[in-house]
Length: 105
Image (tube, rainbow, N blue to C red; front, side, top):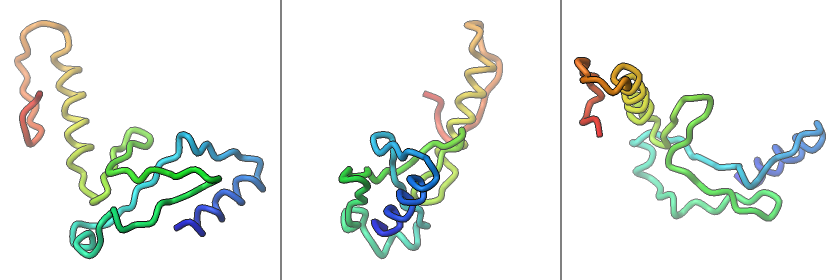
């Protein structure tokens, strides 16, 4: 992965773009079936410009929450919670129940 990071960094430099390593995060997408064959702790650190890029379990990009196991559960839960807040955020008694596959806390 470090070789790919160097290629991306070089491309950004050539095109006048700056890669902000302080805000950069990495996520390794793999299904639950594939994750049985490796452990995240065994993955070598991703290093760009002598900065270790943290490996995340989930990441939100353009409003879509993506999890490392390719599950939509976190995204759907967030959408449900925001819908519940919009529908019941007036401070009045809420007569709408939003089911998110779990309790609304």
